[in-house]
Length: 517
Image (cartoon, one colour):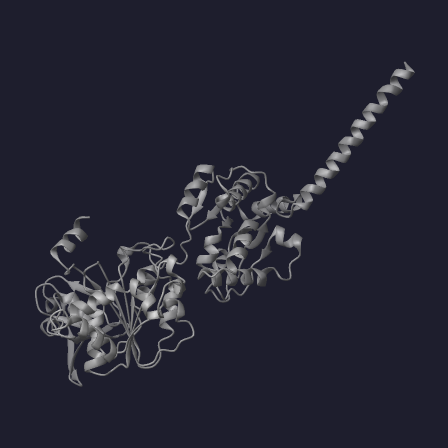
């Protein structure tokens, strides 16, 4: 019996020692996984209990969010932000590329480095608080109660299998979200991405909360975008009780109550349906508004390079284009509404006939394949011609009745000093005494438009045109387009005017297609 007892003791001791060794090794492995250490998970649960499961969210940011807005992390300062390691790897690959987003990638990396430069690896895993003075977010002095951390998602067990190597990064991010969703329940884990397909994949993989980045959206729907004019029902003067009229330097001004015209903005046009009244907002105070009487008949007789308006909307556009006190004109509208034609006519009129400008600069965005135009033969202007065919077509239409259309176009291009430039080479320039036409603005981001506008110096007028229904960019929507952003930001600027051109005047065929397709 004693021999049997000794024989049974050895195996039990061996099994226990093996178990202890296994548990010790497992503990070391878990502690080495920085983002998923036992301490981090426990701390997160304690934080969740303290803050409340519904008041404290955890946002996981996709790479495209930081490329779209490098300071996006500051938009979630009251919650917790997690940056998967895969995102950092993708930013690292992009930062040295020749694409435009490379700059945004570098800015995002520097922003993260500023937050983490004094933090230990354990603190980065568990999350560090945001800076109290959030200057980049626009809320100066606002205190951030949330944290930001980095997640080593490459060490996680795959939940979502990668379909191919190209999408392996997306799938690692999805795996990280699902892991956090399971381990940190009942906290609300939200994946933020601008990739529509990524949002669909996430929902299909079981991610409960998936959202687009909407902090940069100034309006919820494109229908709320200001059109630059108000069209009142009936007769204008029937709705006016008290008015003070005066004549200043040949201009007839009417001062009246502001309330009937709300919402109203500086340089906004006012027209009615049953009379020929037309005016433009000259001054705005708390309770009053001052309109400049333009008269619809006078507007419809405005002429630029022998072009007269076909409707009142074109009339308002020509009035703004020819006004020397307006530095920025924004033209929106459907294809065939006359945006480019009116802009070029006004440019030629003021450059050649009135000699207000020394040159005309025409530019537009180029598709992704044309971001680097060096592969095309010829000079910069010759390289840009394929994307500026709309402008050359407009010049041809303006001189179609000349004896020699081609000769007239060449003469005008030389006389007006028309230059075709790439938007990619505008940074660092200072454009003086020029008429700048920025076409197809709907495909530009707010930062790209800002780059162009900030190039404009003294004596320069810039016209931005675009159709929000024809966005070709894969990363922009009508509410996030730089054109929408510009309309909303400049609507109260005294040196700008915005006109939405209603109606299609190109042809009855184009009009029917616009309305029925």
